[in-house]
Image (cartoon, rainbow, N blue to C red):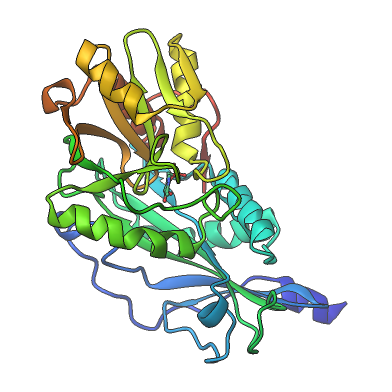
Length: 359
Ligand SMILES: Cc1ncc(COP(=O)(O)O)c(C=O)c1O
């Protein structure tokens, strides 16, 4: 009994010396890490145990650890905000916990129970709370991660896992800030196929995406628009879900098993319904987008994601076409959504849907 309590009670070992905090203007995205991290282990037959907050430091895993060979790796991305009244909050942490658990099921991994995971994350943000930026547009990005750690060779699920969360103070995800980005419509590579891992935040999906993103970047585009394996139907944009504003309808591709079910996508659908606008989740072909651009029906395109919140798209290009969207400017729907979501995150607008949790 005593043993069980000791193994499931969170222990906190604080860093001896704290790091210097970077100036807000230098933050960028994902360049700096805070002083501490949260860790939790899984062992078959024992379950999840040893929750602990330690100084941010290198991990010790064996070279035979299954994550290094068979890629059992999943991560999440969530944010903590400093609200205008000084409160520190988390934005929809249960959504991220559930998505990690769903991904773990697909990758045959064990995932920590929600409360064990979120208790550790809340305590971590408390310990590192001086790192939560007070400036609008900046936040503390939290990266929960799950890896298989059993040391063996042979393709099968690991019997041991490590869950850890690290934090990084961040500003804007794109160099463009809140300005519209240019997107390359990918016609060679694919990110994910139905039946694969596309609906999870498996590290493998990001490995699959790097080549196309690099080629697009060399051409001067911020990210790629992924299509399905037939290169006909739109899936998502780089690290964002994507929305198209036509005259009387806003469309986002329906979740089909190869698209990541985004948290901000979910917020945007809720808000658009709340605004009384028509939002449809359905199959959408690039052909329909090109045609609606020709006829003037296409008014706005924007991406949604935790890192960038709402990112307007000013241009969609491929060898076959170059579509300028809304004169390359941020449109009214993207602006309204950005203001609403960030208003709720920073405590300037009422939290109508209970998305914010005070730490
Ligand atoms: C591939 C991909 N699609 C969509 C998203 C948007 O998801 P969320 O809104 O939960 O951040 C992300 C970012 O997490 C992503 O990496």
